Image (cartoon, rainbow, N blue to C red; front, side):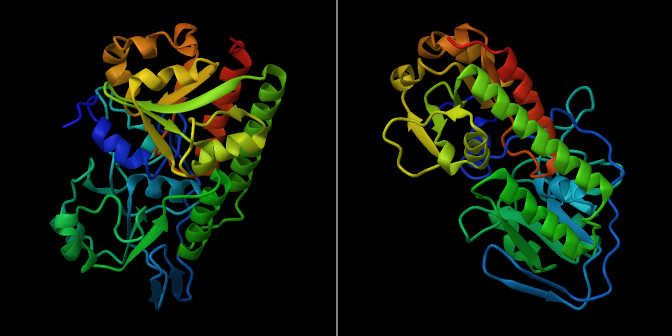
Length: 334
């Protein structure tokens, strides 16, 4: 078995599929979730091609944590969630949980592979929402329990792959609206304005600096490098004007798995964006990998967080892109 940093195996499941960057850098509170279900029927064609038709919009919605956080930022508050919901030692949730407040929802699972079916059943759920990356299964619904879980309420699969973060975010705004959110709210409009401004700031920094940027998820045995054309945020950053480099001989896949001997391909990268889910935990071990430690961007301290698996929302990505714009303005061409 390939040895990876603690948590990396699970993280790469998400990395190869949900390669979203972050709900900002920390969880926060929100007052924008007006979850009043419309009177009319609920109809939704999901990413598995399934038509979901209910007589009225569901009010008891349970969702995977990144999905739940994206819906919250779009104005709809779920009743329950599962996913990456274990607070750290300080009581803070992962950025993947966005603005979720655990005191306001029922948690039926706190990490990958964990789902309390009995607690879920007692909620009398009306709809479950999760990502799909293979057009067959739901990302965080454990396969061994899926038949029982999916028998308790209709399930809507949202796509895990998008061309841009704009397209991804609009998927959740649309779904939130169908669930009863006020998608014309001032809060949502403000977040969208801030998102657009943050991307513009990235474009300005890119034009002024000419920086080359690589997006990576490293382990002690392999280096996974993103092809920006197949990564929503990578493609978005390129469209904004940032020079995000691709691995050599790309294969039309999100990630190329390289040996550490091949890391020298990225000696011309001025900045590296690295998977925030696993980097801090494995930083000490990674520093012992000579080809990593000798990359110019690493030696210059120009390694910044890539917030993989963050909620797709204007609020989330406004924070992420604003942070990145500041880092790019401070970074130097190597």
